[in-house]
Length: 524
Image (cartoon, rainbow, N blue to C red; front, side, top):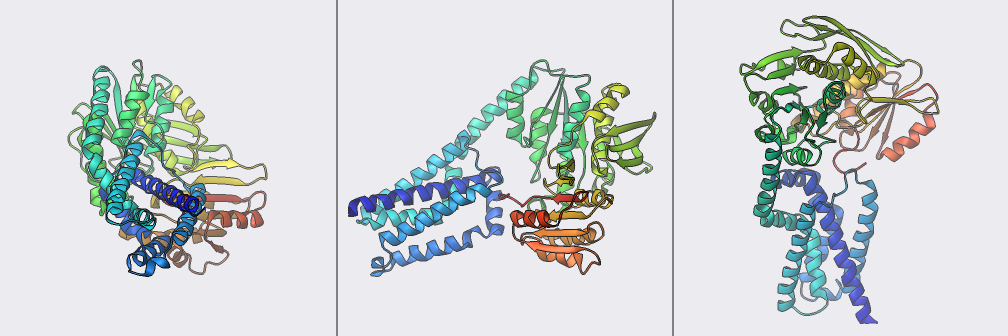
């Protein structure tokens, strides 16, 4: 009986360690398998000093003190591991981006388990008894980030060789399609929406392939080329994301774009970029990579786009407002229940369009897509038809109505200072009922995060009737920005579930609800 209980405890401990390893690899994966990025996450997340980690550390240290193992017994450790296992299963329901069990993750997981087995073998040689393997697993549970880092280091040459093979194959495919028009799109925000809009418009004339979802890293682009690009495609639209200097250059060295769009340069991912100048330098790696006969399409509504001189390639600058160097601008923006009507002022005259989309940010993204479409000789009638048909990109200022009469403005993806301000402008224009904003604020803004969330709170005060602030990440900053606004009802909650409860209680037909940003990082 005792043997069976001991075996059961060992099994529970092993499952708990495996589950913790999987959770660790989830964050390693979200940080692009880069040790430096993962270390930055660890330094700011508080994960290594969480309550479960501290409890585990106390148990581990107590087990090493002579005479204490009578207290830190197998049943005690078994209860701890069972608690952690059940907790992990519960947390899995809240993960925003669960670990994807790719071949690489499986390799890392296998190496991490092998590392534990080596430590177990050494420990069992030195110390006998049932407690030894359990204590080793306790230390492995605590040090799962270290085991992951060790696995990354061990597999680095393997992954480099595998990835290079994929990259070489993608390069071969591109060489076999010399007439393929390759368009790169980057920006602190707006690149995904612009990609979708451009794909829809160009599809009126060409067979188009675009990077799906958020496949905007080098390996994401490689996967797109190898799995999605067809021999008959005429245009390849490549979204290029970056979290550090050199990321976009790496993609350009592979795909060699001839047209480049920079949708914005702003304070996004400052935790990794550190300065706005680094953001600018990285985004313009796309423009610097263009050939002399290429085309750069730049959004001059952003200071760090407008002040960047470009001399290596022809440039078309655009913006919502008319300025001396802006070739394409916008006038007569009119919102209605059916969407937005606006006029693009082009060097060759005016082009009036209607779209189901709302918000100046979406109009701006459409202008960039129209510029490229005109450059590639898409007929204006086809452009107008495509713009009319464009569907809203999920979670990016998309508007829908519920059967109960609520208007939902969904801007839950990756909120940023410019986009959130525009979303609040759209909310402010809704006058049929209460205007409600639900938000945890903005993240990944480095040293600017507090100041920008204070400004965000100030903007909410002038745009909403009800503000529901979720979580603790930016609570104090937003509340400071809100101050004591007249007529704004403020609620503070810990979770989106609680926010939904308040919304259910206060919302009525005709009200408008803006979801501005989702919870950051991992959780829903």
